[in-house]
Length: 372
Image (cartoon, rainbow, N blue to C red; front, side):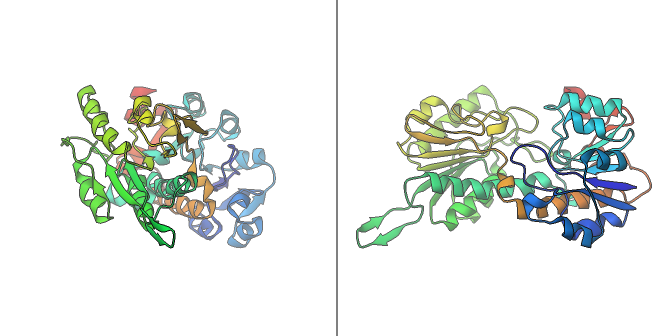
């Protein structure tokens, strides 16, 4: 088997799928590992470092795709990239099949076996493969830094000769991996932090990080078996807006992280709620690419509406490419090792069955096959 690691071509994508120190993990199962010229340059990994690790540098992407039996990427491939892949080859990386239907259909036509990192099941055995959690942790951290630099106030309590400056009040909406990292980061910066989530199980985690948990009538069945938040009823959303609205009007910075797997992000902050916020306050919306948790969010843009700065954050992990690449590389190589522990894929295995989207001209993942 020959493995290819192409350079990411999406705008502002600085990560690389495999860092040099993990090339040896691929060589245990792969006869050769090809790396496209400058694939790791934006993450500060040189071609020389890959060669020293045992990889071969390929100067032309088309040549790499044509020679590789397995392609490892960060971002979903474009149609042009899939066109260059071998028939009956294999792809591992983020795929987002419902948003890339033409790409997935072409993979079906070419009988490409594809594994989507975002579909790795959230079970204990797969924790080291969980790229969504790794990248969410980075996003939560960076979101707080963006809020701090956009806010015209200090985050911590300061005692100065000019008087006492109270700490900023930060509200975190959603206490998944990104939200918990945002709480921890905001606390490190000295802010007073509140958090809200529909899942009662996260209250203890929120409070253990030093934040207060917003009270409301909690829903017992608020998450899927896979650990993702569920969509809620219209009545629940109304009550949710009431609770969030009360805290919003007192907050200086808000980090929104709430997402529903495979669907549009829930609208937690309406325009009316934004109007009631303090002028000069900041919202950093980590769900911008999925439609946004704030109605006024514009993905990839920072706008000011009703005196409030709204940051439509996208692909924050790419702003910290060194650590993001190292974490992602560990996730994908662990999945690779698990997939190739036998001579053929075991589709009875929970991880293989969950993460595989296409194989031999057919859809494997049930959720994708029902919704595509």
